[in-house]
Image (cartoon, rainbow, N blue to C red; front, side, top):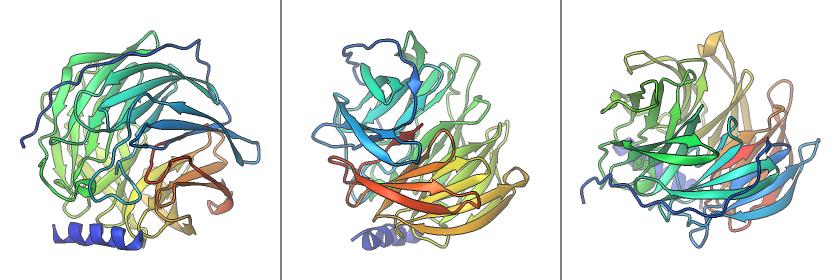
Length: 381
């Protein structure tokens, strides 16, 4: 716990009740036409507590962005206590569903999730649904199944199915995580991400400092979760965010060790670490993958660290660090794999980079995100 306190202090310095799982009532809003999916676009969530918005940017062939439109989510952003650059302290708060051409945005301040149809760089609000808990921070999708991670009151996950371009809440798919609801500061002690293993049979949640564990729920064929998760503790690691590595592997960003770890999620739900490599930076929290490359966002150092992977992730070779604007948080890579876009939360700036053949990054420019200070959540095409 002393290490976690030091981590929280380092981030802040470098950057300038019992558990309840009662479902939240849903609310619906107007629909949209037929979606065709994203194309040459980047979508960024500003998480504004006065009214959450998704800002759409048009991507040119050379990677530069131009703001195209701003879309209200009809919900409120939220701010966790102790947060500076990352008000949600999570990965996956804005998530694209390629099968249904839908974009899911969490509204942490109003306990809802907004559903948009995506057509190129345009969005149309289809629905706003209750998140099934308090303070939603992350959304995961696999085929026709969607899960939302709620961060407060000890944490919970709520499952949905997708039909006709809309989310349908599955009342029996709500599970409490059983984390300490009073642990402080909030931003290091709330869960960080929910996601599926690559083949979709298991649901994974990171707990960050609140247990320093991975929680794994087995899923049946319908997508319903096991009653309780299998817990694997990673002492001192503070697992924050992850991306899939094949069918059962994950690349995991560890904020406690400031490292990337390769782990395998076994069929029984336990987790085995295969490899690890340090970034040498502070507050390594977010991670994005493209081809055989990984990039971590290091909020405390305001950098991106690159790695090249080999041997199914058992080999991790550091490629160096690239500076960003202050408070590097969530990042995304364009669908052609040529460009990386990183949110930086201290001033609400979106940084643009070209990905070179050797994995190094070349700065292209930046965009100021309207009301984007502390915001996170990004999707790129």
